[in-house]
Image (cartoon, rainbow, N blue to C red):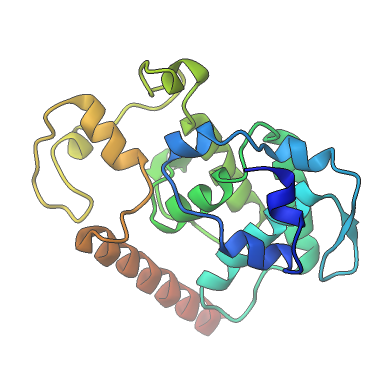
Length: 222
């Protein structure tokens, strides 16, 4: 993919983002077009808040808008919030490829990105806000394979938290399953949800129902 593939058209970057393919975290790392390449492009894009930003920030903002729209609730991220998160993402993750964004979204929605919260490993997104999304982005970045992994070595980074015993012997819906190797379990738990796997889809639906239920209870409480 090249920069021209993104900008030589009459579509908005939000529409362009929606057309990016969902690939595995390993395949996303192989994509040569990086966010840093978009930052260096001279043209500015106007966000919905009227602010002019570079292509890298605009594409990240499009990703965040897509994530934000997936969670039904009364209060959504403001355009200024999206711009702030997008700018932080570009500043920290210039090495991400453009395909890392839909992969990040897929793994985030599918509760495949572990973060430590109150001493417990949390896979679901605790809230649609600046700290929660940025912490998930940092965790996703730690999960990305290093260059040696992309050349055929182990995809597991030295700073990556190992799989739990439960993950080694269960599928995502809780069905007992003994993976033949640690690598096979790692690929299963660290890859984006499979749209053709009913277990993955049922799990995602369960997560979304839980998020909507928590949102309703929260608003009723206040």
